[in-house]
Image 1 (cartoon, rainbow, N blue to C red):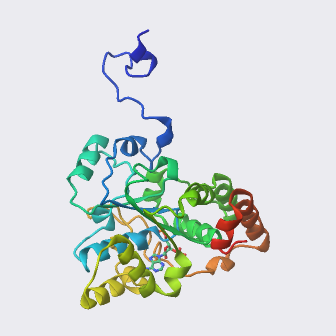
Image 2 (spheres, helix red, strand yellow):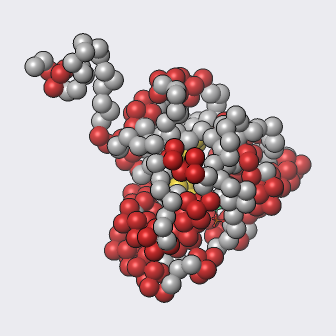
Image 3 (tube, rainbow, N blue to C red):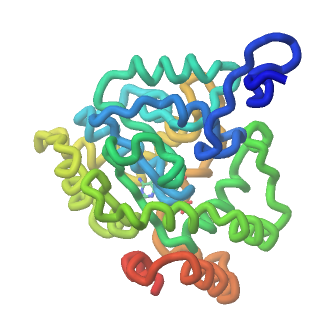
Length: 300
Ligand code: A3P
Protein backbone atom coordinates (compact mmCIF):
# COMPACT_ATOMS: atom_id res chain seq x y z
CA UNK A 1 0.00 0.00 0.00
CA UNK A 2 1.40 3.40 -0.95
CA UNK A 3 1.20 6.44 1.25
CA UNK A 4 -1.45 8.04 -0.91
CA UNK A 5 -3.59 4.86 -0.78
CA UNK A 6 -3.38 5.01 3.00
CA UNK A 7 -4.59 8.60 2.94
CA UNK A 8 -7.53 7.71 0.73
CA UNK A 9 -6.26 9.36 -2.47
CA UNK A 10 -7.00 6.29 -4.58
CA UNK A 11 -10.14 4.20 -4.76
CA UNK A 12 -8.75 1.06 -6.39
CA UNK A 13 -9.66 2.22 -9.91
CA UNK A 14 -6.36 4.04 -10.35
CA UNK A 15 -8.27 7.35 -10.46
CA UNK A 16 -7.10 10.14 -8.21
CA UNK A 17 -9.84 10.92 -5.68
CA UNK A 18 -10.39 14.30 -4.04
CA UNK A 19 -8.13 14.56 -1.01
CA UNK A 20 -10.22 14.41 2.15
CA UNK A 21 -10.27 17.85 3.80
CA UNK A 22 -8.92 18.29 7.30
CA UNK A 23 -11.53 16.98 9.81
CA UNK A 24 -11.57 20.47 11.41
CA UNK A 25 -13.97 21.54 8.62
CA UNK A 26 -16.60 19.07 9.79
CA UNK A 27 -18.34 16.08 8.29
CA UNK A 28 -20.07 16.29 4.89
CA UNK A 29 -23.87 16.57 4.94
CA UNK A 30 -26.68 17.78 2.70
CA UNK A 31 -26.10 21.33 3.99
CA UNK A 32 -22.38 21.16 4.77
CA UNK A 33 -19.52 20.62 2.33
CA UNK A 34 -16.20 20.77 4.20
CA UNK A 35 -14.36 21.16 0.88
CA UNK A 36 -15.98 24.57 0.37
CA UNK A 37 -14.71 25.65 3.77
CA UNK A 38 -11.22 24.22 3.27
CA UNK A 39 -10.87 25.83 -0.16
CA UNK A 40 -12.41 29.22 0.60
CA UNK A 41 -10.04 32.17 0.16
CA UNK A 42 -11.21 34.93 2.47
CA UNK A 43 -10.53 38.59 1.69
CA UNK A 44 -10.34 41.41 4.26
CA UNK A 45 -13.30 43.08 2.52
CA UNK A 46 -15.50 39.97 2.95
CA UNK A 47 -18.37 39.94 5.41
CA UNK A 48 -19.54 36.67 6.92
CA UNK A 49 -22.98 36.49 8.52
CA UNK A 50 -22.66 34.01 11.35
CA UNK A 51 -25.65 32.65 13.24
CA UNK A 52 -27.08 29.66 14.96
CA UNK A 53 -30.02 28.44 12.85
CA UNK A 54 -33.20 30.55 13.20
CA UNK A 55 -31.46 33.55 14.78
CA UNK A 56 -32.41 35.90 11.94
CA UNK A 57 -29.87 34.79 9.34
CA UNK A 58 -32.02 35.62 6.32
CA UNK A 59 -32.96 38.98 7.78
CA UNK A 60 -29.23 39.77 8.10
CA UNK A 61 -28.60 38.56 4.52
CA UNK A 62 -31.19 41.08 3.40
CA UNK A 63 -29.87 43.85 5.68
CA UNK A 64 -26.28 43.52 4.47
CA UNK A 65 -27.24 43.18 0.83
CA UNK A 66 -29.42 46.29 1.10
CA UNK A 67 -26.69 48.23 2.90
CA UNK A 68 -24.13 47.21 0.28
CA UNK A 69 -26.39 48.17 -2.63
CA UNK A 70 -28.09 51.24 -1.18
CA UNK A 71 -31.46 49.53 -1.76
CA UNK A 72 -31.87 46.79 -4.37
CA UNK A 73 -35.03 44.87 -5.26
CA UNK A 74 -33.62 43.43 -8.46
CA UNK A 75 -32.83 39.92 -7.22
CA UNK A 76 -34.94 36.78 -7.30
CA UNK A 77 -33.25 34.80 -4.54
CA UNK A 78 -31.26 36.28 -1.68
CA UNK A 79 -28.88 33.33 -2.12
CA UNK A 80 -27.89 34.63 -5.56
CA UNK A 81 -26.48 37.79 -3.97
CA UNK A 82 -25.51 36.46 -0.52
CA UNK A 83 -24.52 32.80 -0.91
CA UNK A 84 -24.53 30.20 1.87
CA UNK A 85 -20.84 29.45 2.13
CA UNK A 86 -20.76 25.76 3.08
CA UNK A 87 -23.92 24.58 1.31
CA UNK A 88 -23.29 21.94 -1.39
CA UNK A 89 -24.94 22.75 -4.73
CA UNK A 90 -26.61 19.61 -6.11
CA UNK A 91 -25.21 18.82 -9.54
CA UNK A 92 -22.40 21.35 -9.28
CA UNK A 93 -18.81 20.40 -8.52
CA UNK A 94 -17.42 22.09 -5.39
CA UNK A 95 -14.51 23.50 -7.43
CA UNK A 96 -17.00 25.32 -9.65
CA UNK A 97 -18.68 26.78 -6.56
CA UNK A 98 -15.31 28.00 -5.27
CA UNK A 99 -14.51 29.51 -8.69
CA UNK A 100 -17.85 31.34 -8.55
CA UNK A 101 -16.94 32.69 -5.11
CA UNK A 102 -13.59 33.88 -6.52
CA UNK A 103 -15.38 35.68 -9.39
CA UNK A 104 -17.72 37.63 -7.07
CA UNK A 105 -16.93 41.32 -6.80
CA UNK A 106 -16.02 42.99 -3.52
CA UNK A 107 -17.41 43.39 -0.97
CA UNK A 108 -18.61 39.79 -0.91
CA UNK A 109 -21.15 38.71 1.70
CA UNK A 110 -21.75 35.10 2.73
CA UNK A 111 -23.99 33.35 5.21
CA UNK A 112 -22.68 30.53 7.39
CA UNK A 113 -23.88 28.48 10.36
CA UNK A 114 -20.33 27.32 11.18
CA UNK A 115 -18.82 27.42 14.63
CA UNK A 116 -15.70 29.56 15.07
CA UNK A 117 -13.15 26.78 14.44
CA UNK A 118 -14.96 25.77 11.24
CA UNK A 119 -15.19 29.31 9.85
CA UNK A 120 -12.46 30.00 7.30
CA UNK A 121 -10.52 33.26 7.68
CA UNK A 122 -12.54 34.04 10.83
CA UNK A 123 -9.79 36.33 12.09
CA UNK A 124 -9.35 38.34 8.87
CA UNK A 125 -12.82 38.79 7.32
CA UNK A 126 -15.51 40.97 8.96
CA UNK A 127 -18.01 38.95 10.98
CA UNK A 128 -21.57 40.05 11.71
CA UNK A 129 -23.04 37.64 14.23
CA UNK A 130 -26.68 37.59 15.28
CA UNK A 131 -27.79 35.64 18.32
CA UNK A 132 -31.37 35.08 19.40
CA UNK A 133 -33.02 33.68 22.51
CA UNK A 134 -32.62 29.88 22.23
CA UNK A 135 -36.27 29.38 23.21
CA UNK A 136 -37.39 31.40 20.17
CA UNK A 137 -34.82 29.66 17.94
CA UNK A 138 -36.15 26.29 19.08
CA UNK A 139 -39.79 27.12 18.29
CA UNK A 140 -38.86 28.83 15.03
CA UNK A 141 -36.92 25.70 13.98
CA UNK A 142 -39.93 23.50 14.70
CA UNK A 143 -42.09 25.62 12.40
CA UNK A 144 -39.28 25.66 9.84
CA UNK A 145 -39.42 21.86 9.60
CA UNK A 146 -43.21 21.70 9.65
CA UNK A 147 -43.51 24.33 6.91
CA UNK A 148 -40.91 22.82 4.54
CA UNK A 149 -42.27 21.23 1.38
CA UNK A 150 -41.83 17.42 1.33
CA UNK A 151 -39.35 17.78 -1.56
CA UNK A 152 -37.23 20.34 0.33
CA UNK A 153 -37.25 18.12 3.43
CA UNK A 154 -36.16 15.11 1.37
CA UNK A 155 -33.28 17.04 -0.22
CA UNK A 156 -32.08 18.35 3.12
CA UNK A 157 -32.29 14.83 4.58
CA UNK A 158 -34.49 16.08 7.45
CA UNK A 159 -37.55 14.05 8.51
CA UNK A 160 -40.84 15.75 9.43
CA UNK A 161 -41.14 15.72 13.23
CA UNK A 162 -43.81 13.33 14.49
CA UNK A 163 -44.58 15.67 17.39
CA UNK A 164 -43.20 18.78 19.05
CA UNK A 165 -41.77 16.65 21.87
CA UNK A 166 -39.91 14.41 19.45
CA UNK A 167 -38.51 17.47 17.68
CA UNK A 168 -37.57 19.08 21.00
CA UNK A 169 -35.49 16.10 22.14
CA UNK A 170 -33.58 16.06 18.85
CA UNK A 171 -33.05 19.85 18.85
CA UNK A 172 -31.74 19.85 22.40
CA UNK A 173 -29.54 16.82 21.86
CA UNK A 174 -28.09 18.10 18.57
CA UNK A 175 -27.35 21.37 20.34
CA UNK A 176 -26.37 23.57 17.35
CA UNK A 177 -27.49 26.77 19.13
CA UNK A 178 -25.39 26.00 22.20
CA UNK A 179 -22.25 24.96 20.29
CA UNK A 180 -22.47 27.93 17.97
CA UNK A 181 -22.77 30.54 20.73
CA UNK A 182 -20.19 28.79 22.92
CA UNK A 183 -17.63 28.76 20.11
CA UNK A 184 -18.05 32.44 19.22
CA UNK A 185 -18.26 33.92 22.71
CA UNK A 186 -14.45 34.12 23.22
CA UNK A 187 -14.40 36.36 20.11
CA UNK A 188 -17.11 38.71 21.31
CA UNK A 189 -14.63 41.59 21.59
CA UNK A 190 -12.51 40.80 18.52
CA UNK A 191 -12.22 43.99 16.45
CA UNK A 192 -13.49 42.25 13.30
CA UNK A 193 -16.61 40.91 15.06
CA UNK A 194 -19.93 42.73 15.50
CA UNK A 195 -22.27 40.72 17.74
CA UNK A 196 -25.92 41.76 17.57
CA UNK A 197 -28.96 40.40 19.32
CA UNK A 198 -32.13 39.72 17.33
CA UNK A 199 -34.11 41.23 20.21
CA UNK A 200 -32.21 44.56 19.85
CA UNK A 201 -32.84 44.61 16.10
CA UNK A 202 -36.53 44.16 16.83
CA UNK A 203 -36.51 46.87 19.52
CA UNK A 204 -34.84 49.61 17.46
CA UNK A 205 -34.07 48.58 13.92
CA UNK A 206 -32.94 52.01 12.61
CA UNK A 207 -30.33 52.21 15.41
CA UNK A 208 -29.13 48.67 14.63
CA UNK A 209 -28.88 49.50 10.94
CA UNK A 210 -26.72 52.55 11.66
CA UNK A 211 -24.51 50.47 13.93
CA UNK A 212 -23.95 47.83 11.25
CA UNK A 213 -23.25 50.48 8.60
CA UNK A 214 -20.70 52.18 10.85
CA UNK A 215 -18.99 48.85 11.61
CA UNK A 216 -18.67 48.03 7.91
CA UNK A 217 -17.87 51.60 6.84
CA UNK A 218 -20.76 51.57 4.32
CA UNK A 219 -22.67 54.82 4.17
CA UNK A 220 -26.15 55.56 2.81
CA UNK A 221 -27.82 58.74 1.63
CA UNK A 222 -31.02 59.61 3.52
CA UNK A 223 -33.08 58.42 0.53
CA UNK A 224 -31.19 55.11 0.39
CA UNK A 225 -31.59 54.67 4.14
CA UNK A 226 -35.36 55.01 3.86
CA UNK A 227 -35.42 52.37 1.12
CA UNK A 228 -33.21 50.01 3.11
CA UNK A 229 -35.45 50.38 6.17
CA UNK A 230 -38.48 49.51 4.07
CA UNK A 231 -36.91 46.51 2.26
CA UNK A 232 -35.66 45.04 5.55
CA UNK A 233 -39.00 45.34 7.32
CA UNK A 234 -40.84 42.16 8.24
CA UNK A 235 -43.82 43.22 6.13
CA UNK A 236 -41.73 43.79 2.99
CA UNK A 237 -39.86 40.51 3.39
CA UNK A 238 -43.08 38.61 4.03
CA UNK A 239 -44.73 40.16 0.98
CA UNK A 240 -41.72 39.04 -1.11
CA UNK A 241 -41.17 35.74 0.69
CA UNK A 242 -40.34 33.78 -2.47
CA UNK A 243 -37.03 35.69 -2.70
CA UNK A 244 -36.04 34.37 0.73
CA UNK A 245 -37.35 30.82 0.54
CA UNK A 246 -35.50 29.32 -2.40
CA UNK A 247 -31.83 28.79 -3.07
CA UNK A 248 -31.86 30.14 -6.61
CA UNK A 249 -34.11 32.04 -8.97
CA UNK A 250 -35.07 28.93 -10.97
CA UNK A 251 -35.99 26.75 -7.97
CA UNK A 252 -39.36 26.21 -6.35
CA UNK A 253 -39.80 27.73 -2.87
CA UNK A 254 -38.70 25.38 -0.08
CA UNK A 255 -41.58 26.36 2.20
CA UNK A 256 -45.34 26.44 2.01
CA UNK A 257 -46.84 29.93 1.56
CA UNK A 258 -46.72 31.82 4.87
CA UNK A 259 -43.89 29.63 6.18
CA UNK A 260 -40.33 30.75 7.00
CA UNK A 261 -40.91 34.55 7.15
CA UNK A 262 -43.40 33.54 9.79
CA UNK A 263 -43.98 35.75 12.85
CA UNK A 264 -40.69 37.54 13.48
CA UNK A 265 -41.33 38.18 17.17
CA UNK A 266 -39.34 37.96 20.37
CA UNK A 267 -40.81 35.82 23.13
CA UNK A 268 -43.24 33.94 20.87
CA UNK A 269 -41.83 30.65 22.24
CA UNK A 270 -44.53 30.68 24.90
CA UNK A 271 -46.99 29.35 22.32
CA UNK A 272 -45.29 25.93 22.35
CA UNK A 273 -42.74 25.58 25.14
CA UNK A 274 -43.91 24.26 28.49
CA UNK A 275 -42.13 25.42 31.67
CA UNK A 276 -40.34 22.04 31.63
CA UNK A 277 -39.05 22.55 28.07
CA UNK A 278 -37.88 26.04 28.98
CA UNK A 279 -36.11 24.82 32.09
CA UNK A 280 -34.19 22.23 30.08
CA UNK A 281 -33.06 24.81 27.50
CA UNK A 282 -31.93 27.21 30.20
CA UNK A 283 -30.16 24.43 32.14
CA UNK A 284 -28.19 23.43 29.04
CA UNK A 285 -27.31 27.08 28.33
CA UNK A 286 -26.08 27.51 31.91
CA UNK A 287 -24.05 24.32 31.64
CA UNK A 288 -22.36 25.33 28.38
CA UNK A 289 -22.02 29.12 28.48
CA UNK A 290 -20.02 31.49 30.66
CA UNK A 291 -21.88 33.75 33.11
CA UNK A 292 -20.92 36.88 31.10
CA UNK A 293 -22.37 35.34 27.95
CA UNK A 294 -25.56 34.32 29.78
CA UNK A 295 -26.06 37.80 31.13
CA UNK A 296 -25.41 39.41 27.72
CA UNK A 297 -28.08 37.12 26.30
CA UNK A 298 -30.38 37.82 29.28
CA UNK A 299 -30.47 34.13 30.18
CA UNK A 300 -28.71 34.36 33.56
P1 A3P B 1 -39.95 33.09 13.32
O1 A3P B 1 -40.01 31.66 12.85
O2 A3P B 1 -39.92 33.21 14.81
O3 A3P B 1 -41.01 33.94 12.73
P2 A3P B 1 -33.34 32.29 9.92
O4 A3P B 1 -33.27 33.19 8.74
O5 A3P B 1 -32.09 32.29 10.75
O6 A3P B 1 -33.80 30.94 9.56
O7 A3P B 1 -34.43 32.92 10.92
C1 A3P B 1 -35.79 32.91 10.59
C2 A3P B 1 -36.53 33.77 11.60
O8 A3P B 1 -36.27 35.16 11.32
C3 A3P B 1 -38.04 33.58 11.49
O9 A3P B 1 -38.55 33.71 12.83
C4 A3P B 1 -38.44 34.78 10.63
O10 A3P B 1 -39.79 35.15 10.74
C5 A3P B 1 -37.50 35.85 11.19
N1 A3P B 1 -37.37 37.00 10.28
C6 A3P B 1 -37.13 36.99 8.96
N2 A3P B 1 -37.16 38.24 8.45
C7 A3P B 1 -37.43 39.06 9.50
C8 A3P B 1 -37.60 40.49 9.63
N3 A3P B 1 -37.51 41.31 8.58
N4 A3P B 1 -37.87 40.98 10.86
C9 A3P B 1 -37.96 40.16 11.93
N5 A3P B 1 -37.82 38.81 11.87
C10 A3P B 1 -37.55 38.27 10.67
